[in-house]
Length: 189
Image (cartoon, rainbow, N blue to C red):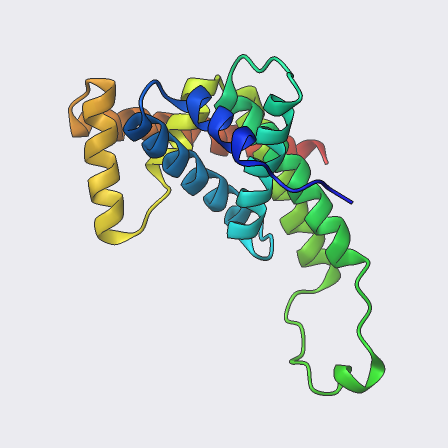
C-alpha cells in the first residue's frame, strides 16, 4: 500500500517548481493542466486523478532524496507510467454478466482500438523524441479550450518573448514534425 503524501513532501515539490509561492503555484497548475491534457489525449479514465497521482509520486521521490534535474520532464515520464498502469487496470476489469445487457454496444472494433493504441504509442514516442522545450511548448499550446486557449497562448508568447503569430508558426512546425513522425512510426508497424 502506498504511503500518504506528507505536507513536507508537497512543500518540497512546490519549492522545486518555483522560487516564490506565486511562481511555484503557477508552475504547478500549468504542469497539472498539461498532465491532465496528456491523460485525456491518451484516453485514460479520470485524467485529473492520474495527474494528482503523478504529483504524489513525484513529491515522494523528492522526499526520498532522489535528485531530479528537470522536474517537468520527470513528471511527464512518471505520468506515462501512471497511464500505463491505468490502461492495464482497465484491460483486467471484469463485468458481471447481468450488467452486460444494459451496456451500450461498443462502436470500436478490436482493429480500431489497436489502431488507436498504435497511434497513441507513436505519438508518445514522437513526443519523447522532441526536446523538453519543444514538447512543453506543443503541449501547452493545445492545452485549453476557447477563451482559456487564447489567454494561455498570449501568456505563452509573452513568456517566450515571441509575437503571437511567431508562436503559432513555431507550434505549427512542431505539429507538422509530430504528424510526420507519427506517420513514419505507423508505417513501421
